[in-house]
Picture 1 (cartoon, rainbow, N blue to C red):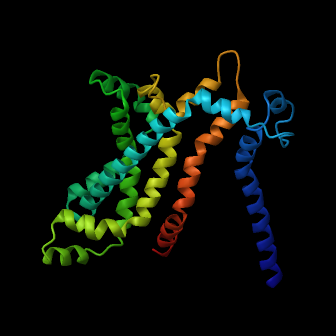
Picture 2: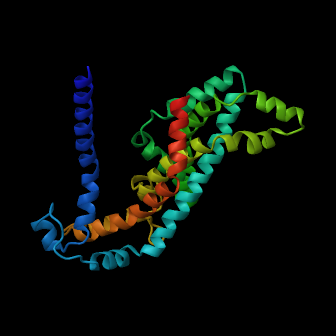
Picture 3: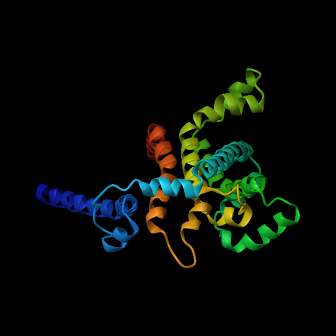
Length: 274
């Protein structure tokens, strides 16, 4: 029996190592090739760079207009995620605390929206927003709210099931309004879920290319994924600069993850216990 457990443990370690190598291989290729010249990248894609060529990062940052595009991506991501968190948590609170047939209907409506692919509504959505002159950054934020709310409401609704309604009743007895109950009692208890919602939406919005390309593809308002496409022209592909640009682009998301790591682990642990 003991030998069987050791065999299973060894196999789990082997499988874990294989999955780890598969997961980290794109990051290895991106990072190592970002320091190579174009000639070296094509001659030895998998190997380590012979010399650390930082010119790729300098040229990539210049071509990306990194300060402007970074600020565009940052503003759109922060505003979109903040609005998604606010409206999704409020919607989930209303659905969870209102016991009626309509609350169940609206909840199922949000869940069903998760199954609708963006490509199926892409053309009519852009057409409608174009008619009302909303093909701009505010319009993009509004679209992100629409596409991100369904999953966020689903997560918040599940978390609120573990919060006793007696807390609401006690706060009402103390004279608190519904808004005060939500902001002072309920929302602080949803911190692990809020971090999870924020992380998922930050990664999605920060790296999104398709929706911004349809809405704000104008000079001066482009995000990092949009300007990254400039490295891939009709007659040439600057992979060495693209690798450096991708490395620059993912740094903010990695920093955000490590800063919020404790809260993310707490949210996973809380979900496992429940």
